[in-house]
Length: 113
Length: 113
Image 1 (cartoon, one colour):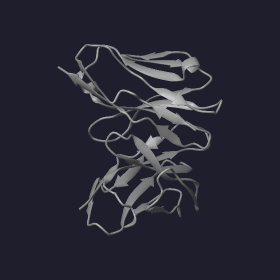
Image 2: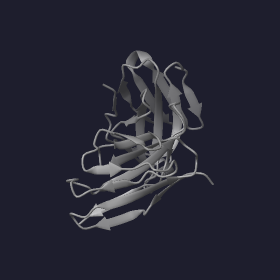
Image 3: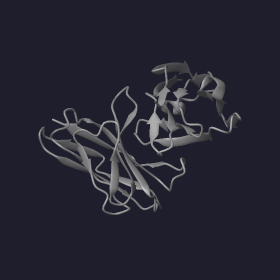
Image 4: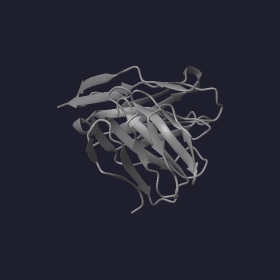
């Protein structure tokens, strides 16, 4: 069965620290997509990144970077030099063949000044 | 601007009453989804629809009903059979069969008193 696990429920860091959010997934599909979303206190989901199962290249976008490793079924997310505005709940998600998104439990990140 | 509109943002209902949450999109997306979010549990799929006049149960469909009479609209009814309806509800849509391009609404927070 498809499953996404975010083992870190809450993380608290001080501004300018680097922080890595872990995501481990399970799927039998050979073709799938992985996502990261940010949910600020207002509640809407903000799309951060999508990665397909055939593209294991790491990606960097400003202070954000993602490390996708099929060998360990992980898709970790790192924020470099965190800022208070990064405080939010972050979700990792897996898209299976039927188009449904399966979400992890979320990691609540608190960045203190 | 194209997007998904969920209304209302906050909804209060008495226990035992049915309530309908609205979800409208003007993106011409084929597929639409309803998710429920409880604290610490991530998002769980309630129902989804890939074409008009067709929909499928998600992981937690009991106590909910939907309709898809128009491409733009996918209302969710929370019935009195739902034992614990207080939650945050998110609607999403996606164009075509490709597993990317999900768009989320801003959510409805339902409180049953």
